[in-house]
Length: 156
Image 1 (cartoon, rainbow, N blue to C red):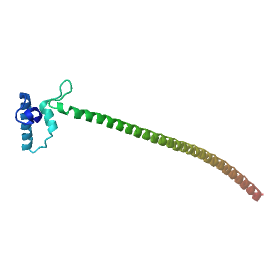
Image 2: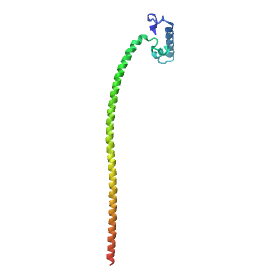
Image 3: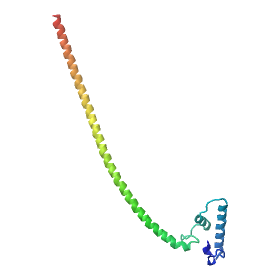
Image 4: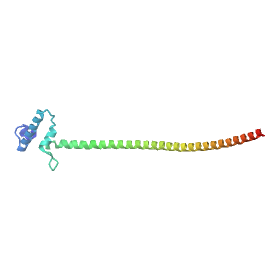
């Protein structure tokens, strides 16, 4: 706030608006200190001077414009690097997904083959059981026939 005073002395303000903003800032700082709250000077300054103007300038920060431009350019570079890193990560995850998808399809095919073999086995089991029951019935018939012949032979 001392940038708007003569020779940066913090006492003789160039315009009344600067003095009012300074007084409001100091008053709010004192109030926050009195109740023991942490003071975020940047947020407090922004609250006091209000939002930026239509040209996106914030009152009292003209001398900081070059620093913001540097930060903005730095953020663009960082953002580009982050985007490239994220693209690489997405590509790696896409490859992993495709690999997992292929493995899943192989496992799915093995499962389906096992299901088919199980159905075939059950069908063969049914066929074997039916054949066994048929042969058992024939054996019982043969046994009954022999039994009748033996009874007839004994009774003669």
